[in-house]
Length: 197
Image (cartoon, rainbow, N blue to C red):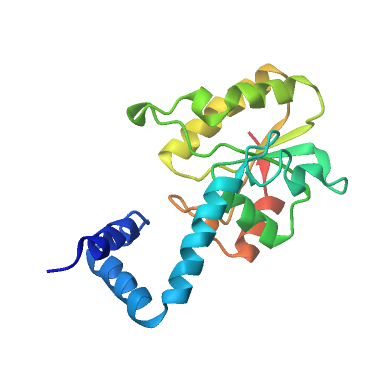
């Protein structure tokens, strides 16, 4: 019979994606037996990140400041705006080095079944951003899933109603794939081959 504290630690690890009961148990026992200092460091890093990381006021990406380093950079192309679903999509695109514009992070996709609507994705903020006339190309980089395509369609309609040109990432991204798992060469090809929607 395990102690309540060990059970609580195992349950906490099970909160992570793809971590089942056995993996959670292995991680808990590893930290307790082999790396208690690493466990303390992990706990402190989690608490500090949760307390100090918020969202950028402009792009909604994770940031420790009101405006993230990408939005604040004068080197970025301010007339290009790439729409992505998650912060990990930003990381994948940035690692490719192909894109030098700005981002708007939806933090998900439209999903009426799950109660996720336009307001939950910050689309009113995106609409205001498009109205200011600075964006000359809106790049849709949502995942090629049913929900991602529905979200892209909704944003496409919003942008075209304001006469903002819209492109969509093209070849190289497999149907049902997610940007964070795509290699930089494939992602570069998809950016280079984007087309008007």
